[in-house]
Length: 257
Ligand code: PEP
Image (tube, rainbow, N blue to C red):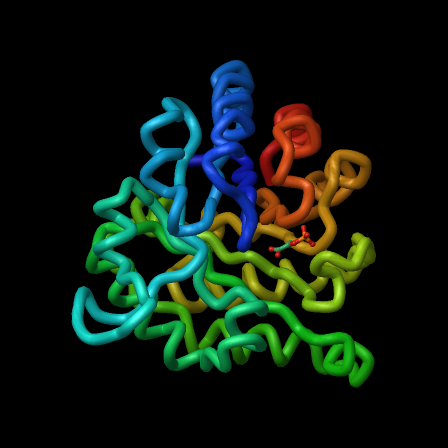
């Protein structure tokens, strides 16, 4: 089964109910762009409202806490975001790893709990500029993933539905810099190798590997056409329907990798 390109908007700590109109506009357009799987991850406070407003696009959370409930002031569990309408959760974003000290082991625990709650996973990885300059980006990214990929045992199509990996070099996030196509292809090929090793040939070849880091309408076509790129995780450019849809349209115009 060839998977559709997957374009996810990560709204981060942006958005009040005034932004629901953007979600509606994205949803309406996505109904005409069925070659692409489109989703947004609003802040926790908007998950339920966005879920109620949209028909076509997926709605997800940007993170979740481990466990299901308990004395964790300010935290929200996977089962709680699923109850609010989320169908997937982004885990291991560098802003969680760096800003909240999240380890690979914690991300792996969250992955297990999210799967238990019936959520699909978008597992992020990516190196800092220092690691890239030291020539160790590939090893760094593979080590992150090896330590956080959960076991998935339900058959190839189901595995590919349950997880996507997002490669996001930290130095490219929100900076306007993007990795070169050659660098993206090199890391994505290495991730593909690890996914095949972990989940077997069929599932490992189907799982979508998204690129993230300053993707916008102007550079999306070239990035999305690169080998082993199965979509994009988009921050800043997902905050308006107009800029986000430019990326979705670019994805709709390319062949699936
Ligand atoms: C992100 O934070 O996932 C991201 C890719 O952000 P931006 O598109 O703004 O670089």
